[in-house]
Amino acid sequence: MPYSSQAVAKPYFIVAIVLFCVQILFGLMMGVQYVIGDFLFPLIPFNIARLVHTTLLIIWLLFGFMGAAYFIVPAESKRELHNPKLAKILFWIFLSASILTILGYLLISYATLAKITGNHFWPTMGREFMEHPTIIKICIIGVAGGFLYNIAMTIFQGRKTVINMVLLTGFIGLVVLFLLTLYNPDNLVVSKYYWWWSIHLWLKGVWEFIMVAILAFILMKVTGVERDVVEKWLYVIIVIIVMSGLIGTGQHYYWIGTPEYWQWWGSIFSALEPLPFFLMTVFAFNMYNRRRHVHPNQAATLWVLGTTVMAFLGAGILGFLHTLAPINYYTHGTQITAAHSHLAFYGAYVMIVLSMISYAMPILRGRINNSNRSQVVEMWSFWLMTIGMIFMALFISAAGILQVYLQRVSEIPIPFMVVQENISLFYKLRALAGLIFFLGLIVYIISFFLKYEENDESSS
Ligand code: HEM
Ligand code: HEM
Image 1 (cartoon, rainbow, N blue to C red):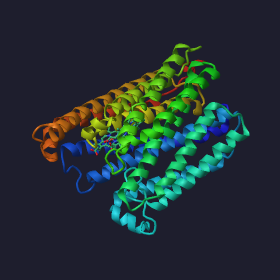
Image 2 (tube, rainbow, N blue to C red):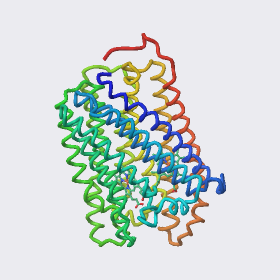
Image 3 (cartoon, protein in one colour):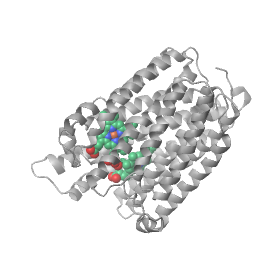
Image 4 (tube, rainbow, N blue to C red):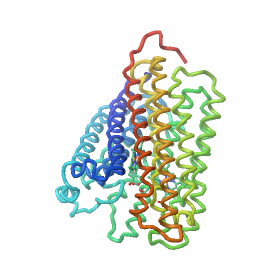
């Protein structure tokens, strides 16, 4: 490892994986609840399981992103991290805040949590993906501010590369947009309007910056392609992210009480949103074909190529399928949305974090690559998780198509709950696919514990 301060990334990656496991356990719980309605009721009702599942998703991805930054920024800046101690302190604060939040969701009612955390003084709770108590939001902003300061100082005092700049811009955007979670107007339309600024501009804006910067860094390392080639791709992709993503926010303004012109603006610009994901796929395979060496970490290479394909399928293709206003009129808020959100989140953000961990973890443990056996096991985990997720998305898409037809398109529309009864077979199959996904995750974790022999190492 060229810079000792990169080691601060390790606990971030470990916590990310542990929380990922818990997130998936809650996903499985809900998968079963869809089939057996009162499974675990009243201990963990569906709404609480869902809350924990989505909250943990965001939290562990943030741990993964921060770990990635602590690994990449010193390497790119060619200097030690500005303040490794601060990174360690922030780690513990963020971890404690996250655990407290999840325990709060699980142990007391949401209303009590709101009351004891003083939500009435500054009401910010109750909106999807940003349900955290106000005090926790403020704490996260503090952690994010300290993190930004640390990586920005490292970059400004060291070598300034395009990868570092794109990464930093992504993180600045992430923090600035998170500030909006503190703004919760009484008017539901206005509240939803700004909610999407955080959620949409994160997922189809600044998080994409972070994703493409990590992608570029790993690709450069595993293929050995020159920096200037990688940078040209980066410029093109980020321009298209901004061009499509900003006004593309309109794809969420069709039916929330905003003016009708959003149906045009939203449809036109969001139709362009798959483009950056398509370009990332072309970028990755182009770099791979031009590779100047075969990197011994084949597992990381597989993850990094895989993430671009899966992100294009989940975000690009499944996203495009329901983004035009006349189609979204029927599909809005159905299982089609859930199919898309699973495949997109997994393909883009879960897989890029796993790519980073796969590339960085062996280095953080003092070698270039894991043993061949451990890489084979890791590749098995890649296929189990990826195929599990593809089938989950396929079954839920099928459920969604039937749901839309029976409930909203057919001559005699059927009530919501009757439709749910009719499509229950797909929920059973989804639970099965979820189990395969979980198995893949267990295999992934096992791959870290397989023995490493000296002669397993090859040089790049
Ligand atoms: C990396 C893997 C996963 C990611 C990224 C993920 C992500 C998400 C997201 C973003 C939502 C909110 C969906 C929306 O509002 O449209 C959600 C809900 C849900 N997830 Fe997952 N999830 C994952 C794995 C799983 C697994 C393995 C299962 C198990 C079957 C599962 C079952 C569910 C269920 C049942 C819901 C609730 C859907 C509803 O409200 O109808 N998830 N998940
Ligand atoms: C990695 C990128 C992406 C992620 C992680 C993602 C995730 C999500 C999630 C979680 C939701 C549900 C939000 C809610 O709870 O209401 C959603 C909704 C939606 N997404 Fe994406 N998305 C991505 C990219 C895209 C792209 C590129 C498009 C279009 C081309 C798109 C089109 C949509 C649409 C139209 C909805 C609204 C669905 C509805 O009306 O019910 N998404 N997305």
